[in-house]
Image 1 (cartoon, one colour):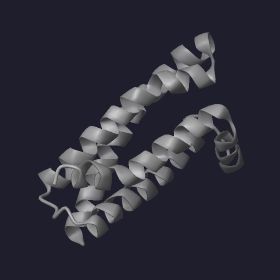
Image 2: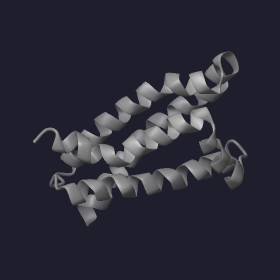
Image 3: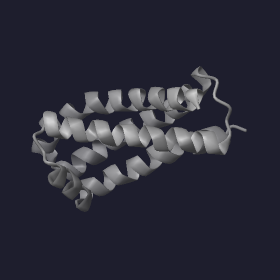
Length: 132
């Protein structure tokens, strides 16, 4: 269980770090110029790349056995960490209430984000089972 938690933490830190760097670029530079949906679509390939790389690197770095149950646990634990961190960032840096943050999922850019979250949760299995 310690390896799973460590792997999930590393996976989360890598992807959240990339998202934390890309977020201000999307919000401050892209959204005012091209709109929220296009900005989210511009950011998505970079986040997907980070998800793919991190989903392969984290289990290998911590030598986690590539069992489906362990990889699913990594994805779900990392998703939980990500959601907690995302709420904290929204409250702290963007002054968004919990209700406002949840309402974003009902928008087009929220759908892009939700799809990335689903991939984030499942990519440890997808990326590591394909290599077997």
